Length: 440
Image (cartoon, rainbow, N blue to C red; front, top):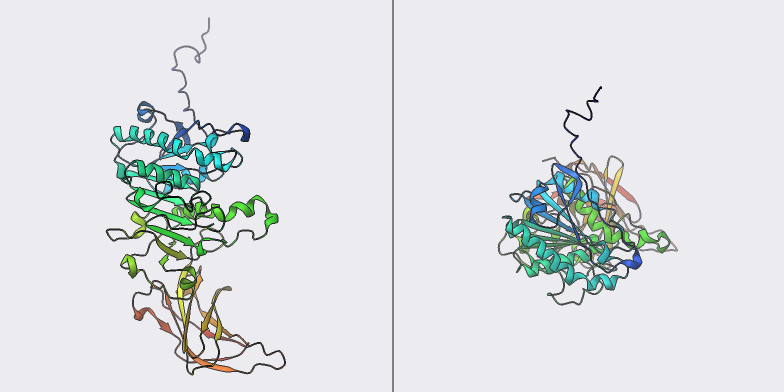
């Protein structure tokens, strides 16, 4: 009798590890929590392991000596797995050697937003019980980093509060606004919830919170109306969600790319655009904060100030990062009306523009220009002195002045570079000048 080698003698094939995934909830059967914790490790970033207790954790590749990143999604309109989460997990694991745990609370987050809000406390308690199991395995509180998206940011805040603010870090990606803008600090994310709390605001006029909720609060492009997002309602769901989800895509991009998403503290977005905030001396002693996995966002002072609003401009698509330059114009003579000058940087057929307004009876005006190309690759600057709109005859007004620019942060005046010759401008006529800045 011939025995087949596949049945006798050989060891059975090793069973492939079963990967767990997010649940799908019918919109009408939501509200029950049914929380799952899915562990992803650097050696197998595409395969989630369902972990409940300490034994699951020990058998699934969890490494207590590494940092742990906990991702908490927000409200789910359709009761389906968040479209961004797979990429987020992969990118995190490529960017840092850590345990990544995704909290699946799809069941509790779907249906009606206000029902999801009611589940926040219950979910926070479940996450605390789970984190306690990590502490039993020897994980330190300070090595835990919660990344919460929208409503998930406030869940992270409540978890952090239950741990007495001793968790290492909480990152809120456009923390939810509805039901939270006027909530007490006990109910929402705030700077007391972890050793370092940061928030990235991209939709403050809609789904995101308007107020600062961390040590550092990034108001990207002013915190609303993100470039590249549809501005018309007929774009449907994309119109509704694009600004809100930009915070997630910005963070993923910051993990993938080395170009810095650096921001600058300022009292308001308007003051930032007007060139009134050029460095990070106050209150960060020149350590400008950056989005991404930089320790304490790159802020190197203790104790950390709280609720510092910081501003930056971005492009409309990944990698999103822009360089920010101060642009200044010094008039030779005072004028009896405001002087508006459009300044455009040119770099290999790409242009970046800004406007300088010099108030009447003043000689100096400034602004901020954002450019995706490094400053030393900008080879030309164009000026257009805006006409005073005399309809019946051509405006022949001319002005003379001096133009200067400097890359932010401007920590000292030596960084300021001025055109060697005076700039002569006639109303509505574009003038071009070569710009030569050495690469550092």
